[in-house]
Image 1 (tube, rainbow, N blue to C red):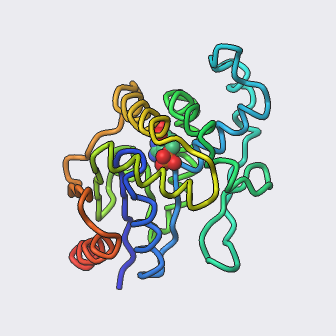
Image 2: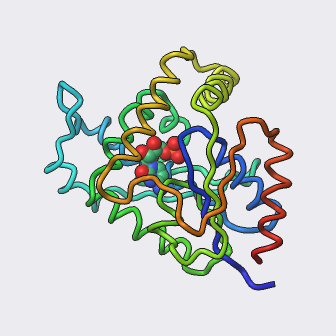
Length: 228
Ligand code: C5P
């Protein structure tokens, strides 16, 4: 069977990654979480003091450093899922904190950051056989992807899922803070100038507000069978 490219975009915390991971595992494709790459750049900025006292980004300094930021993925030997590495160090847990979540969307508005990451994402997908999730995969990274999905769910449901996930990992979290973060990221992602979050014209829309993970998985596999 010929390999295809699968782009899964959508709003923050709508379960895209879970769907994309499950599908990739089922069909033997590579899975890439493009949001992890924007998160890794954000962690680099936090660790290298590239945010000013009022949270403003030191853009000129980041521009100078952008070619020094190397993001790679290594497969976890137990789960076989990719773990994000920043300049060779495993940062998978550190990029998932609320601090990174609250700073990542402004970083993702910067054109030079997007250019650098889109180039790497296109390189990772050049052999096809890839499932990539994000915000601009179907519109910018792989506009020719054979299967494009755009996922959405209500903000309250997305915040509740994220809250449950953080609690399950033992990370303290407030539902209100998470809801605020989800809504704020949606706002910034949809209104930025470069590659704003939007459904590609040829993407299939999925509102998974009232679907179980199993139902979402079955739905996605059916879409794959139709497209492949
Ligand atoms: O997918 P995740 O929520 O981890 O992504 C973190 C942030 O990275 C998003 O809120 C968005 O601002 C940015 N992002 C993006 N383009 C992508 C993936 C993520 O702008 N392709």
